[in-house]
Length: 451
Image (cartoon, rainbow, N blue to C red; front, side, top):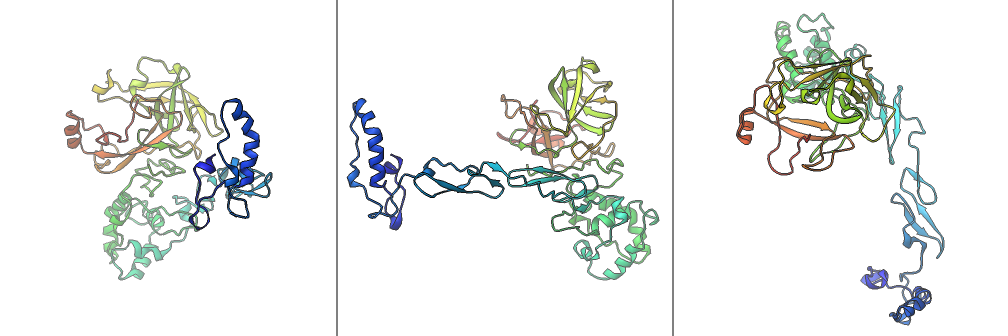
């Protein structure tokens, strides 16, 4: 009936009609049933073409039921039989078997392969990166063994002149012997170390790392008769260590803080996060149920909001990390009981009128960091300029998917804008304190966090 009443275009722009034999078969199967219902078979089959009269007329074919799965293409071999041409990554008579993309062991250097749909993902051991974990990541330790690729210097240099002199001077700077800045060698390594493979990625130093190195070392360069060679403005003005290499001092001395397996493009107006995207994200469970988010800042300390723990003892809580779905357990997750809760001493309820809605969980034993469980970086103390208006930041959690809607089962993420306090106060007709970060977007449909 579909091919009869909603015909598709055939050869030379004519309609493809059912073949006469197809119509006869359907009539013989359905005419009696229609008769018992008081209906008459409505189609004059003799008016329809035979395959000789119309080679593209629609015949009985097993492909009409779309038997091939996962976008496989059905090819009829007879009126009863067919074969499926499967998309890459699938096998089987109906393309029903997802081929194991990890069977070839593509992840190097101890990386763990996770099979996907027509793809795989390598979760790399600490110190390695790249699609197949075949890249040595830029760390203070690895930089001691990496050669600098001076061909990159032209991409970051303020001047094309005297590059050989700049090169000679940089080569004279050794770790902890430069006399200007303890991490100048690490900075130059992050700037100039070569990519290790075509599949690898290159993280240049963050803009603020460059500015620190310049302020500390420019006099040293000038003493050597060399102008500071790097234009810091061409480096990423970002605090995300997945994008650029941070200054180790700002990163609180941890080579793992802020480093994650995946970067993301974009909770409300957002998307589901991948496992490993936010390895410092913690789910706070009270009597077994998720009630708040938290963040790892140290192997023994986890930061959360004071209103999440107000009035309850440490024994009421369990902390879950290294996962994304509240409904599913995964081998990468761990749980920790809480040994102690420390609330800010001047916190008062309700939190939205309070400047100190912050608390700490102390856990024992210490958390062991993995690819899926890592700490976030803490910003410099008392530096209100660290968060810049106009920058994008990411919120993540298991909050409501929309105002008044359902709570998310899978970890959600969304990008939101940072605003200066004056603009925020004007939009909210309120008085946002300097200790707050104002973020979000005006208007319906903007991404935000929902409790």
